Image (cartoon, rainbow, N blue to C red; front, side, top):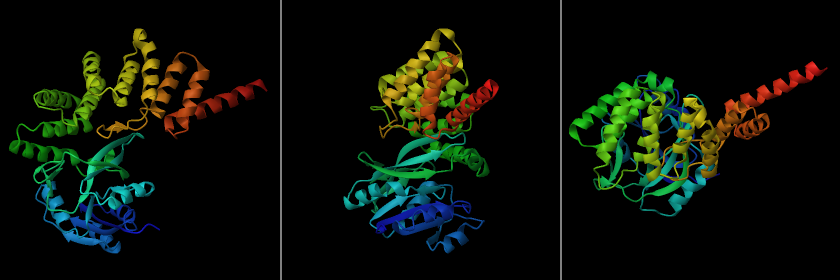
Length: 376
């Protein structure tokens, strides 16, 4: 049994009856305090929180996530704070890393990995600063997609932990149910009126369009954001994500020439970002260009060479350096009628329990079974 850590988990919630119990139960044996700040739930969220015996606080929602977050951390009593949302759970296999951060008595904030599950078995890993000392010097800024600041300035130095938080809120049914897209755009536009030259807000608006599959609006917004970023003294850390999201928008609109130029520019800045090469490989498949078909093998082999993304500044799709690249290599070999190599790649991909690869292996099994029956 782990000794409870001197951490106050702080979360703001509204109508989270379907997930809050699971979230709290992932935390109760780990931390000394859980603060649930309710902003106006009309379902059983509060009743469930009472059943789970956490500390409940009430805050009048005023369309400002930062102010709600800042209230939540103001009621924390423990030396360290961990920010969580109700649709998240703490991965207990990574608790040792959480313990190490606390034992180090760090005065620096730290990141955790947010492992977000999307609908089609896609998992996106991103690092966010969620752990920090309980001090009034730390406050959030921004109506939405709020950023943690230190003494009113952006945080420059963070530790990177191996703590993992699983997030379910990016699944399409959750986004639609809570009308997140319209709400987020409205708040981003309001904040943009206060900060018209904010590259970060432009980026988040583009991401919102992208998530909503409004690719044309996203392309225009990302293009403007990159122009804004080019005038800054240094590139913000989220530029790598802009390149990737922008690229997928161009892929979806089949704007391959622009995509090629974008990827070439992006790789100059981020040569170790596996997702960029994976995106290019996928685009080669989509083009169905015989002259470029031979490049598919080389690209996905290079993805395997680079491996999964380890650079903490990148937001990455899980599997681009392993099972997804292996699966696409399998597709390539299958088209080339090299069944032995295709089977090898699918088999390796299936070891990760990747469903498309598992389906391929099942198909091979059935094919062999039918062939044996016919021989008899």
